[in-house]
Image 1 (cartoon, rainbow, N blue to C red):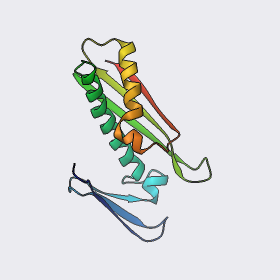
Image 2 (image 1 turned 120 degrees about the vertical axis):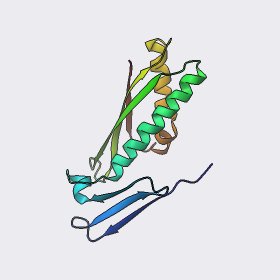
Image 3 (image 1 turned 60 degrees about the vertical axis):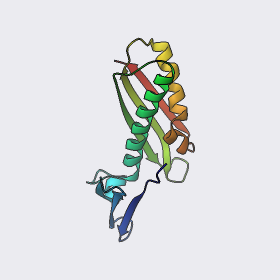
Amino acid sequence: MPTRKAKAEWSGDLKGGKGTMEFGSGAYKVAYSFHSRMETGPGTNPEELIAAAHAGCFSMALSADLGKAGFTPDHITTDASVEFGNGSGKWAIEKIHLDCTAKIPGIDNAKFQEIAAGTKDNCPVSRALASVKDITVTAKLA
């Protein structure tokens, strides 16, 4: 399996500085700052990138898990919400919620919920984020 890479650069102090994050493939390069992370300034932030990675990983893993159970999804859409805060006295990702809607011929809701819950626990990004105390999923059939 290939090794994936990314790069971040930062200049200046925490509140006045700025930086860029870039995928190793060159597919994505974007600015980030204190304002884009802690407020609503332009640019992105690490938590938004984690949300995108988790949503993408969950959707792919759900497709694989459905396939193992004999179902082929027509479509899966997953939105991820990442909450960043310092409720424990240290800045951390405190909660992630995955909101998934899928169109899957022939599956009943109980089986879908069972598979989605297992995927939430076992997709590679969920496992990588195991230190996040609260990862939840809402799964709906379209």
